[in-house]
Image (cartoon, rainbow, N blue to C red; front, side, top):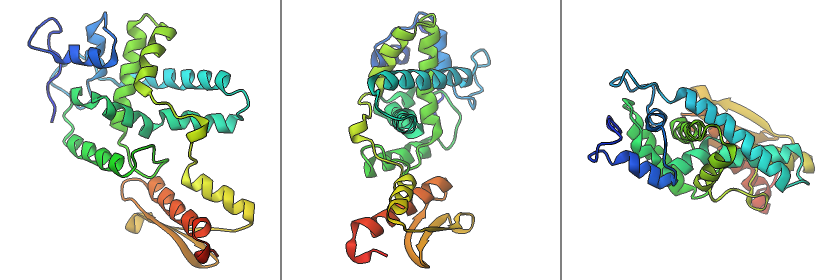
Length: 255
């Protein structure tokens, strides 16, 4: 349980603040903003510092706008649906969680979350299994995305709402950005689009409440099963990924 971060930003014995600023290559004028950005709402030892909730809200909005703006002008031939998928791949919960973990920003969070170490382990195992974005096949705890979003919000406020300066800092943290050429579809979307194209009708069986599982059938034949007790959407994505492999990647097993 991490209870330390910044007490006095001018104290040489508190290197954490300088380390964060070194990582993001930006020096805060208002150090209290950075302190707030790394204070979880479970942390109760410092009643003078609010949690990062408001900064996270601001940072989330900023990221959505900037990614949408950049993609709109960079890819004039993409449809709105394609732009939406591309934006999500760059700033959804998993993408931001990976960026937070990549830069080690989670190490500075002040919290009293007894499950935090377990969440770290969960994300580590997911990244090990899927080195690149899993498109919904792993559970990336929201707290890691929140950290980056709150930091973005803090930078935006500290720069006196300078969009250009904030984006210059933030864009570096998000590298490498997903581009259309290496964008993978969500497994459910990919399966549905391919099945519709070839005229295959699928049926989903929801067993998530009982066992954490989702099953997919074609003509009463089981073609995909996914399990995840934390999130139903992940179980569904895993089932769809398996169904796609069985239907379209293994000719001998096609229905």
